Image (tube, rainbow over all chains, first blue to last red; front, side, top):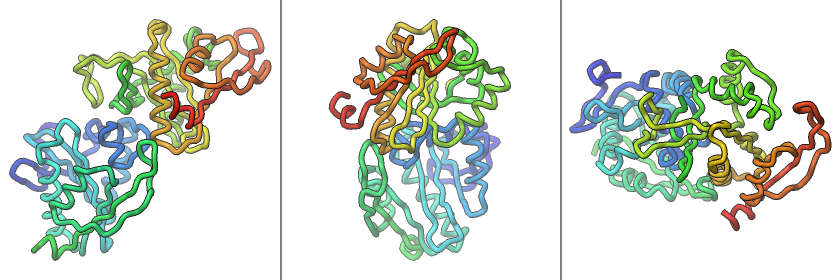
Length: 177
Length: 189
């Protein structure tokens, strides 16, 4: 998919947000397979491109899902999405391809996404869950003003052991202030 | 062509099985040098296409293509010019059970280089790190010396033998059962 033909949903300083297309399966597949992404993201098991495309149809295109592909200079760098957007507290999740990490694109993408989310949907707040060991993601949420609301002890099996899952929340009024 | 990297090792990489890998997988259901030690029957191209969709993409199984990745090989799906060579395949079956099972094969033209041992080692690590399984198992036909040595070299313990269990290549063969427990993995790997 070329940058010229991609629909733009939102523009930031460096990051642009676009709808996720079925053609993006080869990139999306990274989120489910790359060991540096799938482990902190909470996925198990490999997923091929056909399964990834089906996933776009089943999850991305679901009525209560809002997913965006984050691009820099026309190249996909990651994904940001919320599930259950019509609930009081949609669930936020995001990932960045490892080769694009360390540049601040993640924070910029999530910030841009939340701006558009709170503007386009009447959402009271968002929740995000992150594993205890995932320092960069915790730092990103804290910088954006999320508050740590809870710790689910030994909630998931990751990297050969049970790890805690931290629950963060952000209210609309906190974002708009 | 295999897809994205799922597990990285020093010697081999495990990548996703894509629908166009059906021809590679068909070697295990046609080439006598692969199907006989595996005890597999014969499958056509269209049967292999169904196999990828129903079994590989089905629940409870993690399937991989065993690859040799060049230094510049991409982490995502490789293109024709990329330095990624498929040398075999590996499955982890029953991932949510107390004891998932490993099944694996290396193309005859790539055997003898240690790729099978490297792939199984990676798969054992992957299984114990991803799932809370108590052990991993494998079964091998008695005449398959190469595979038995592979498992034994990784510390798998022979637990039993089902006598004259399968008719393969003209005779009834014993099935030899091996396993590696999580605590043994911790000690040895």
